[in-house]
Image (cartoon, rainbow, N blue to C red; front, top):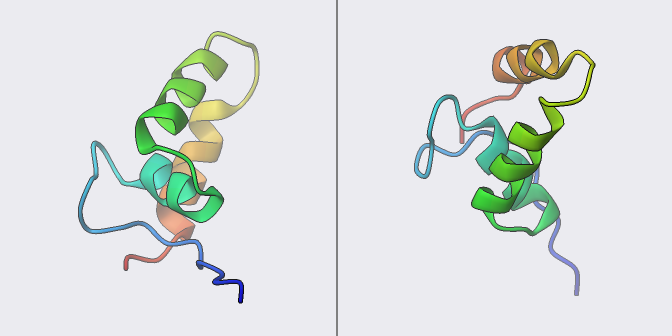
Length: 62
């Protein structure tokens, strides 16, 4: 039996907007690992902050 978790920003365990925490819950990893991945990805060129803001707006709260 597989339990699928929908993508949503949790009300607890938020640092800024809960995007990394929501992604971590969805993919089954630690929120701190997801935050570290995001911070390290910001060292690379790309639209990471823009994607974060878009997810902040589009993802519903739990």
